Length: 200
Image (cartoon, rainbow, N blue to C red):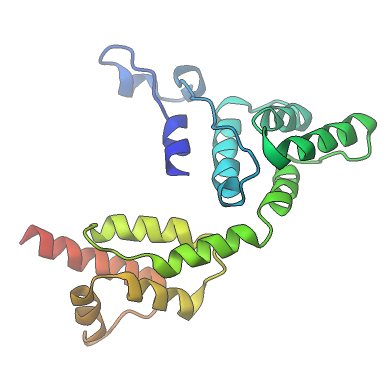
């Protein structure tokens, strides 16, 4: 998913004026990479939708919902995705369905290909995740990305985060006079502690 997003943010450099050019008229100075084809694989539907949203915001403002849906469908190819796409296109052409917003279409796409599978995949990945040799900042970002859509929240989310982080940092935070309680506190304080240790 991160690779798709970064591919979309390829800035077209014009000499040394790169920073000056990306101002108020950002769309005309941005080159946007093509999205990866979505073939219906459950674990990739969330990343595909996020990359589509980014492209639509950057390059297709002012276009109709129908044009946006057709553009997204052009990247839905292969496997069971082909059959689904054909059905959707027939339903659109016959007037059986009409999307009020592109978000309504994305909801339909997620239901069809994400279902409970994507949540199960993310939850399993979250349970296997460990900080290892990563900085805490890297671990936090990867954890946040995986946690989104995993079904974990509140205390269970905090427990998974603590379980995967390196033991020394976890121990220091748990033994602190005021240990963190919310997931945001754990992210912030663990990152600060890790940064201090790496800089000393």
